[in-house]
Image 1 (cartoon, rainbow, N blue to C red):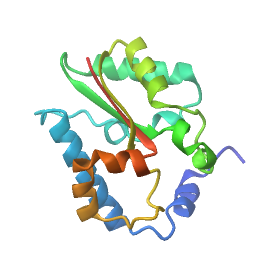
Image 2 (cartoon, rainbow, N blue to C red; image 1 turned 90 degrees about the horizontal axis):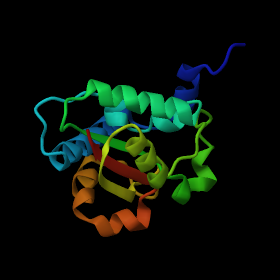
Image 3 (cartoon, one colour; image 1 turned 180 degrees about the horizontal axis):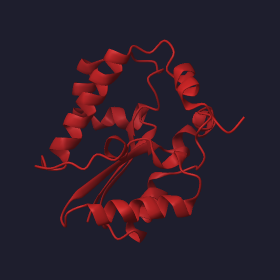
Length: 166
């Protein structure tokens, strides 16, 4: 055997998750991020705005290299939004995802982005819930309302949001 069969892994991880609802929820999140980043005219989508990607890379050096390549591909003044599970707030379940390799926090990702040449902008330690398997149902309507209530972020948020500008 030569590694992880990702199609089977994600089939298992996403079992019981309605994919249309999941897509609708992510559409609401992307709409919020688009507004938060000033509704840019062009978007470079690398792993859905760098969402839940970095923790899958094999080393810290790979994270640095990926972010440096991203910076080089972006126009000056462009903003990157990075979302990911914050190990600080979801340590118990973090490695339940068989493909999570690196334990990252909002502080570590902000540092990686700075090292890659991005300017400091915003770091939100608690932004989104950890997964679609939470106490609240996955709902586009709830997701649309959620960003307007940052107090909820502090209660149920286990994923960070880091925004940096090139």
